[in-house]
Structure formats: C-alpha cells, structure tokens
Image (cartoon, rainbow, N blue to C red; front, side):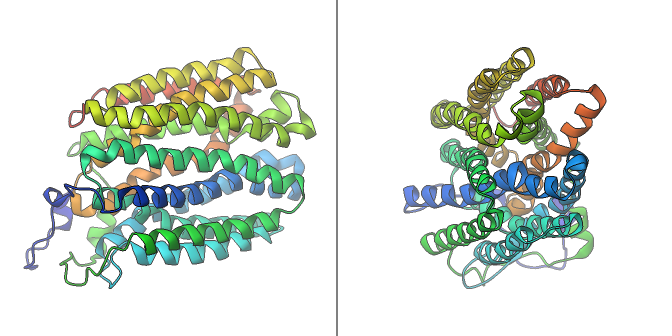
Length: 428
C-alpha cells in the first residue's frame, strides 16, 4: 500500500517500519496503567450504551419495535465508525505539534465525545438518538484511533503480548463493566446521569494518559502531505499485497462478531429466551461477572506467555475452540445457569484471544509510518462487530424464529475466525 502515498517531489525521508522502538517507555508500568485506564473508559462507553442505556431509550420510544429500531440505529452508527476509525488514525499519523501527533486528537476526542454522550442522554426520539449516537461514534473514535496507535509508536515487539493483554483487559473489562454500569442507571431510572458520568470518565482518562506519557514535540519530523486521492485510496488494504493483514482482519471480525453477537444482545436474550422478563436487567451483570472472571485468567496468562514463546497463532486457535464450546452451553441449557456457564467458558476463550490480538495486528501492519491509519482500519474489525451485533442478531432471530439460531451462527463465526489464522505467514 506504500505506493499509494508515494510523492516523488518530496525530499525528506519518511520514517519506516525499521524505526520501530527497541526499548519500552521509560516508565513502562505507568504507561501500561494509563493505557489500560484509557481503553477501559472507551469500552465502558461501548459496553454500557449499546447493551443497556441506549437500548432502554429505544425501547421507551417504541417497545413493540425495539429490536428493529436498535438494529437500524446500530447500523447507521456503524457506518460512521467504519469511515472515521481509519480517518482519525490517518490524521494522527500526519499531525505535527508541540505535544506530538497522537495527543491532540486524544484530548479533542474526549471533549467532543463527552458532549455527544450528554446529547444522547437527553434525546427522546428515534431521530435524535440516531444523530447523537453518530456523533458519539465520530468523536469517541477520534480518541480511540490514536490511543491504540501508541503501541507500535512506543512498544517493542518483544513486549507487545504483554501490552496486548492490557488492551484486552481494557476492552473486556470496559465492555463487561458496562453491563454493571448500564444496569445501575437503568434500574435507578437515571440514564442521563449515566451519560454525564461517562463523559467525565472519558475526559479524565485521556488527560491522564497525555499528561503522564508526554510525546514531546514532533514539529521537525517530516511527513507526507495530505492528498485527497491518497487518503481515499488508503482506506483499502490490498489482500493480494498484504495477505497477512487481510487474514488477521478477517479472523478478528469473525471472532468479535461471534462473541458480541450474543453478549451485546443479552438484555433481550434474558428477557425472552431465558424468560426473566423485567428481572433481565439485574441478571445481565451476573453473566458479565462470570465472563470477566474467565477472561481475566486467560488474558493474564496468555499475553506474557506468548511473549516468552514468541508465538501468537496457537493462542488464537485455542481461543476459538473454547469460545465455540461456550456458545453451545445456552443452546442446550436455556436457563440462567446455562448463561452463567456460557459467561465463564466464553470468557476464557475470549480472554485468550484478546491477550494476543493487538500484538498480532501490530506485527502484520503494511507500513510502519501509517500505523495509526492501518490500526484504525484494523480496529473496524473489533468496533464494527460490536455495533453490528444487535442488527445481525435481530436478523438471525427473525429468520430462525428464536434465539437458538443465534448461538449456532456465532459458533460458525468462531470456527471461521480460527481458520483465518492458519494462512498468516509473518507471525508464528
């Protein structure tokens, strides 16, 4: 893809992938802690808003059409995410400021994302919910894209399994904590307060990361110019030229859709499939706790383990098998106990995958100096399934006439994700 950005009239040499870091940040534990905090804040938003806060708002607008309306809103928001994840990454790759190339978007995204969350909280019609959700996608992604790009910027390959564990803990912990968080504000009938607090958490997390991990000025670093044709072309990563990136992207998309296709639909699964009715909101956090317990165990073990053995692919294959087993439990045992077992087993599998996922992606990037943009494209494979999950689940439930079909489709997706890992050559 480098030829898309070639500019024969430009004299300075752009940094290449060979310039990647060979030593970690000076205060590496602090770097990891604030990276975890930032990722937790972002995925707390995705987990709580999609699974409970916005779902409840949509249900209040029109209870009879809640499934279709949630699918519609999520799909529109997904399109915004697809476009702006790589766009903000590309912008951050080329920014030259006194505080570096990632920090400005981290701060601006936190401020504007916070305002968008509050706007969503006061929305009381389907139109305003949709518009506000699109704004949330636009501006929270402004912070998320550069946050993940700091890994290839600052972390050497030998430590990326450990760093991937931190990112995985942020995603899993934030998404699952979102269930507790959203349930608390839904059951107390104080949804707006939930959005306001989310805005404050996001701003605080991004400010802490920027202040405690300063990039320094990069004004003197040469950059490739912004050219519309190259920017538009940059959204496409050729599977023929970069097959490892393609297979890694496809594996992540399939595995994420398998996992979130069920987990983000839990409120409705608990209400209608398990039969808990009005008690469903209180039960969702129980499954989240079971899943978190399983995922933390495997993430803490598998990330550092993959660094020691220098391998990533076996962990993904094992994680897919475990996730598939977990998805079969509620298919055969449609009870709260079955859902709790699903939470534990699927958490073990998902945690194993998340422990190596980020490390795997940073090692198959097409072009080192486009890390922000390419990781933005890569992140579509995790963000888009979370947004599309309600829409896909709604379609599957509608076609099959029940929730059992949803668990089977998720199982198939988990198997597909595992198979996509096999052709990758750059990474063992």
